Length: 133
Image (cartoon, rainbow, N blue to C red):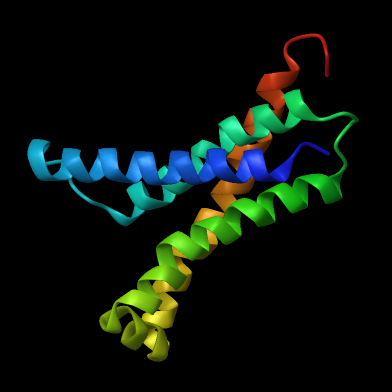
């Protein structure tokens, strides 16, 4: 199993870095800030996480190992995008207290979780290289 702390820090750095960069592009270049973009920005770093997990692993990673890596990154995403804002901002707490607001959050979290699986798989396959599958 690769060291999870390194993978967690890499994902957190990617998540925050991409979000800040995209926020600047929205402000200064006028790019639209769509929900699908937020999903992609959270899922794309999983490609690097998958590659790093394969490269740093001391043995072949099994499904449970991949589930642990995915769950770790998903929990970081939830902490940064849902839990921390709910702790800091009252409107976010109100959003989570309302069933419709909770559905809105679920409409972002569920596709993000599924896309994270896809990009993790792509990263793992990319790290193996041709002929080593």
